[in-house]
Amino acid sequence: MFADLEVFQQVFDVCVTGAGPVGISAALELSRRGLRTLLIEAGPKRSKRPHQNETGFDVGDDIYHAADRLTSATGLGGTSERWGGQCVELDDIDFEARDYVTHSGWPIAHEKISPFYQRARSLLSSNIGDQRSDPDPEPESDFPASRESWTRIRNTARANRAEIASSQNLVVALDARVKALVFDPVEERVHSMSIACRGGSYKVRADHYVLACGGRGNTRLLLNLQVAFPQLFGGSDGPLGRFYMGHLAGQIAQIEFATKEHAERYLFKRTSTGTFVCNRFQPAPQLQRALELPNIAFWPTNRRAAVDEVDPALSLLYLWNSRKTVVHRARWGEADRSRYYNVLHNVLRNPLGTTSAALALFNQKYRVAEPYVLLRRPDLRYGLRYHGEQIPSSSNRAFLKPVQDADGQFKLEVSFQYLPQDFRGTLQAHLALDRWLKERKIGKLIFDTAPENLEEHIAAQAKDGYHQIGLTKMGVDRNHAVVDHNCRVIDIANLYIAGSSVFATSGQANPTLPAVALAVRLAEHLATLARRQSTAAGLSTSSRLEPQRGTPLSVPRSIC
Image 1 (tube, helix red, strand yellow):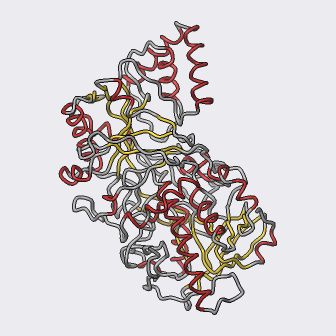
Image 2: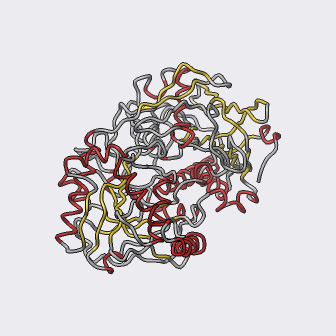
Image 3: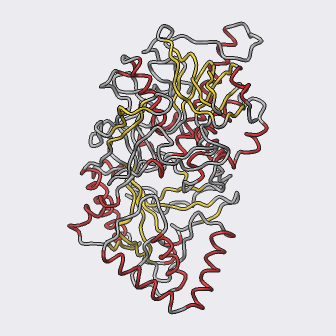
């Protein structure tokens, strides 16, 4: 239920900060387990992009990092109002320490997260019921098929709005901005949170706090706390704010399938729940290790379709995809502009066919409601989209700058680059896929440019800032990590981080589904702590969590 200002006079079991997909999921799961939960959101009921200077970041648009106004949102639902809705699981290999991926390796195995994917899919409206994947004809091949699903309702708040409004254990405070964490260095706990809401200042008190403000938001709060307590988080040279990662995404080739059957295997299908799924190409773990490839996935798309389109529907779709704002748009050269105007000319020459095609596309987009319009091509030639891992680097970081906001907190700046290894590995994965397609007579790749220019082509499309991975990474000690295997901040006994900023590596997956799975796991962990403490207190009549003391290096036992 939604709260008035009186809510700040209460004490909660758990306070969750940030009402994006991860924060909403954590808060709902906590409330379902009987914990009195406060969910704080800086924005209004309807998610919106921030105006310039409205956030605590001064992240400009540069070559590799998109501007902050494009990569963040405030309001109930957060960035889920605008994300693509792609739900993909991490892979076992992501959790391994790989010699060719510096700083790789998680303190837990994938099996500690995978039991929570089903619940995460339900929260994101991406559950697929009892649907089973089509059997892979070559499960032991170098490129076994992997599956992705898509949300039916993009905005996580909208997908769960009935429960958010009616839950008796969940209280939502909107337009409430966290100004600072109030830390007790003796007990090594967060005592309270300082909140600005509707022109006033308040204190929020809870036994446990969960930060789900996005990677940069979580990091900024901790870095500002570190200014007052420099010994926290390994000191100024510690891991906090380092290992900033995203993904490499784009298109450098088309895929031409040998048969219609091969193509259909990688196009959209709808499950009994109404969720769309599709298969993707992904290098097997043994191939990744043998060729030292980053984890990466590929799938067919109509984006940047073949030159000289004459079909009205494909032409319109090409024009739409070429000019709309997309997350990772390639820079346009002379050839791109020439192609665009040629297709535009073909569309204008055939007004009747174009009108009919526009109606058909509208029907497919809004009645069939595919995640994005994907038209079957008679020539079996599609664009090949890729989404790949970025290698962790300690030089990629977020840090405070000597500029304060209205609350007196320092703003955040970032340094974000890709390594030559990122571009080289992405290209080698394409070449390996091309060889495999030809060997199996499934198809072939048609590259956009000459071989010697492909790495530069990949670099020209590399841009992120949306996924905000690694800034508060998970590990085993305070000198190399910010949170432990249960997402608890190692130096603070009652503070937890939820979101992809705890990932040790980025993998090939869009991070939302695994981040929500980790949030569900965290909720179960906090509920387990509550049950243990109730038992230890002799089944106290209070439903609140009893305060737990700890040392900066104490690590609770895993729940699994």
